[in-house]
Amino acid sequence: MRLDKFLCQLNKGSRTEVKNLIRSGQVTVNGAPVMSPEHRVDENMDCIVCRGELLRYQAHIYYMLNKPRGVVSATKDRSDKTVLDLLLPVLAEQDKKRGIAPVGRLDKDTEGLLLLTDDGMLAHELLSPGRHVNKTYLTETAKELSGTDILALETGVDIGEKRKTLPAAVEVLEPKLIRLTIHEGKFHQVKRMLQAVNNEVVALKRVGFGPLVLDETLSPGAARPLTEEEIHALRSRPAVRPPVLDDIEAVIFDLDGTLVDSMWIWHDIDAEYLGKYDIPIPDRLQTDIEGMSFDEVAVYFKERFAIPDTPEQIKDSWNTMAWDKYEREVLLKPGVKAFLDACRSRGIKLGIATSNSRKLLDNISQVHGLTDYFACTLTGCEITKGKPAPDIYLAVAEKLGVRPERCLVFEDIIPGIMAGKNAGMKICAVEDTYSADIRAQKQYLADYYISDYTEIPL
Image (cartoon, rainbow, N blue to C red; front, side, top):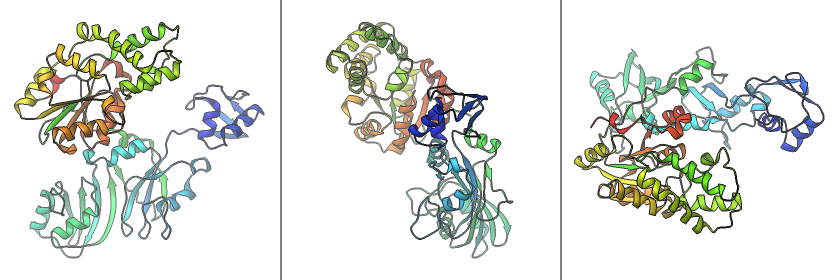
């Protein structure tokens, strides 16, 4: 990381201010003054001192708060004290400008464990309905629960939603005090669950959230940073597993790297195309254009590399260069045909949502005999926003006549995975050599992960 960027991230000033600090000799790296803002530092290993202050870099911060009653789970509120108001006095000065926020919410009259962080990706994952993160509450009830009431809570109750709640775990501690563990995060869920068995919540305290357990040494309103072990536990996922097709009405596939083993050809094509203009291929080019539609990439190339061709001419060149490779060198991922046959035999609808061109999509479908399998195929050029926006997946689901929550998406890159998640669909990440360096991140974000389609039980 550049030294000036490092200092800006620790809120040591604006970009101009930190450059002045560096150039005036007020910053040392490993004991030696550094005068260049562009100097590269290892934020995790180097000893960096600014005006006598040793700086420690954290990409994100994580705090456990024992929320008291009467405080709202928000970052701002016009009338009530917020959980962020309680946390700010605890934070180091350089952390106060971070975008820290509560992960989920506790009602104003509910107390107990609340996680606050600026790690948006982790927060999104923990709150994902598909993750089913456990939430445990000490629940004081208006009257004692009967055996029938407990059985109802443990099998699922009707709280006015489309489906009953997932089975809960109930441990009776005292006649009117239970430890209740749920696996969802619906609005006022515990209160509505008790109402469903003709009871009421008198007091509610959350004592568990996923792997976190409330630190009982924290008085109400107090907070502390999470330990390294707690952070690691939050980031860990259950062992990855292949998807099952129960309750799935449609399966939607990305194309390159997902249905066909083709990601490798695009580096070669980009290098060959840019080589015509004596332009070396940038190291991060493929990462920079991930998720863009074919049209968007052509415009990007023209603007970034000052290509004299029009975007249409650029696309025509790519189509010509890719055609032969797709026809002769690109293979289906192992097990694809058997999986498609299994889906079709179950009456599951099939679709494709790809950033590739319509011309190449149709060519690939014909070469590999896929055309008759898919009721809908869309390209990024045919919708408004490319991945990670959910537009293309939502459009395919609409054309198939299937609700998003009944769709399973297969993807191989992060923007595609996020597009499916943003659409509210289940996601299976697919192994691909091109994205091997982000395998752990793909496994973390997706609901399932496969090396190839032969792993899926049919």
